Image (cartoon, rainbow, N blue to C red; front, side, top):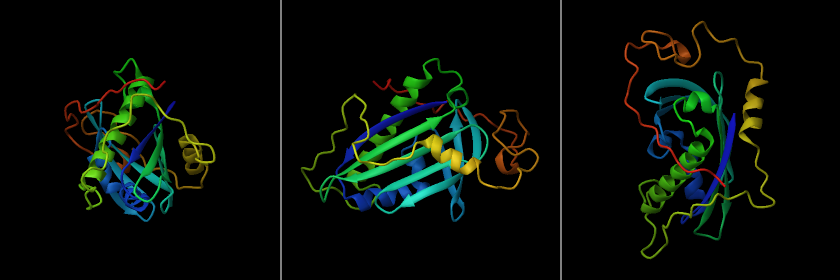
Length: 221
């Protein structure tokens, strides 16, 4: 397993930023490889991703949605993919976004020989894209006033500020896996990549290849 962390400052009020991160249907617009996220219950979502050129489907549990503070989620079964995003207001019109992403690198990027650094660059690129969407008004519906900064962060990674209590994605995943949940139905789990085999939730498909939509990013310090 690999865990990476990145932070960025968004020129928007904390509530505007939180609303966009708490709406998981927005994630395909800024999260690398995510094609679709749909709600399947109050605290569960179904994801479709392009993983190394292959379609993958899985269900995720929403662990926390604390208004204007934190959003946290994790896969329910199969290879681990978990994220915790913490928000910190920086005055009335700016918000620091701190994201921790943990993933099974061997599964998520099987052909990448630099998984840890690629995952780190990928997270940074996702945050930069999110920042641009919010500041331009594409997400949130309120463009930033003329003259407001929209410059992405520099290349170095950032740590959580003292006093910000953020559970790690591993802790988030452990909460899910320790719960008493019904046993998965036969065939449930991640797509194996073989045409006609069952994916998470029992879906089948005769076509698996979407083309390589993965993005590699730089190593965190």
